[in-house]
Image 1 (cartoon, rainbow, N blue to C red):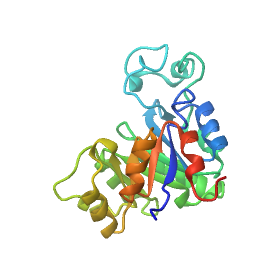
Image 2: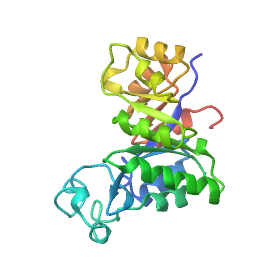
Image 3: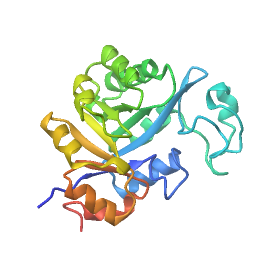
Image 4: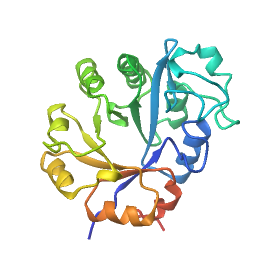
Length: 236
């Protein structure tokens, strides 16, 4: 029998609440996810939680995210209701109730995330294993490894590399994050052979969930964790 994969709340519970907001992460916690995933940028010296490079899709603001001042960003509304949170606010809300996958989006954010993670480990009782740091920018993952080798790394891919999962092994990563569009049994087998965990993004239908389980993936990101949480072992 195929094992049941971990349920990872994509941007919290992005299909149910405004994505990457405290409300979205609170909803994911209530549903009972194994991890939440979020996106971070360094803006005006602070690490903020937001996905897009530009403001227009999600907020009542305009322009490039990184060109804004922090006080201006915090006056904006995500989906006309919620404000853009700081990473520290999300971590305080999570309070070790599930794992946190932090995706590095903008330039220079790796150093700031490491400092925050170190502070939560030394002062708040967190463990390095409470965090999973991922990115499509593998140079930022290298920087994380240089600054704090104990933090688990997740290598994001959109496509199938010629050398399969070798890039993640070379980085000393914990996990490989595979796009649903490129879900491939050979890639998953190769990753497992290299002792890498495989997570798939983004799974929102039962049909796609069944494919993920059949191929032996270890977990998946979803906008609708409520659709899948009861499929996990031990849930009634």
